[in-house]
Amino acid sequence: MLENNLNLLREAADAAGKIARTFFKKNPKVWYKDADQSPVTEADIIINEMLINKLKSARPEYGWLSEETEDDEERLSKDYVFIVDPIDGTRSFIDGHENYACALGIAYKGKMQTAVVQMPSLNKTFWSNIGQGAYENGVKISASTKKDINSSTLLTAKPNLDSKFWPGGVPPGKQVFRSSLAYRLCVTANGSFDAMVTLRDCWEWDIAAGDLIVREAGGQATDRFGKNLCFNNPTPKRPGVLAGSNSIHANLLNRL
Image (tube, helix red, strand yellow):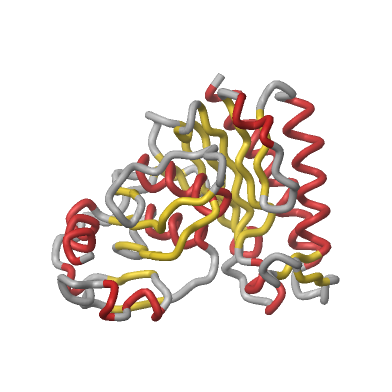
């Protein structure tokens, strides 16, 4: 089952990436959602429809949670649920930046089982099955093992480093920002960065796939309070994410 699901997600991610590349830097149509004025492009919508058709036809008994589909409480009664973001980092996609991603995952009773994240314009695909390690373009990856936070590289937005959030002291080290949470989690999983932090509430579709990939790469991933991430919640949000090497993750958690 795990291998079949992984193959299904990889095929779907390849198809999503192909669509994304046809619209990238081609001035796609853009709309803004009424709820929060976040952007959505015609590429998001087309990819979402493709994913529904491909994934739900293959696994009609699974629930469905996507950024671009109206939420349906029926998913709460399902053991298996697809959790997808057709394009994570839509603003980057619109602006012509390559650090966007197509994020696909399957959760079983709230825990991630299978994940694929494709970065179409960077020709990178990350994937993982629970208990089987994490891979980037077919090569097994490992998260950072760095222990010294002073020399660490941290993926986060500058507002997350406001001293009001860190009673134990603002984390030192080099700060870098990328908009896509799925991207941030994957480049933490492969050791390019030592950790990533977001303290705001996160939609599950932004972080579900990356959560599994980080943990299968040997890193740690929790919410901002140190609790393991669980998914397919009635309100599909989690209270922030801390991910990275075990030592840096523990250091960050102790500072909050």
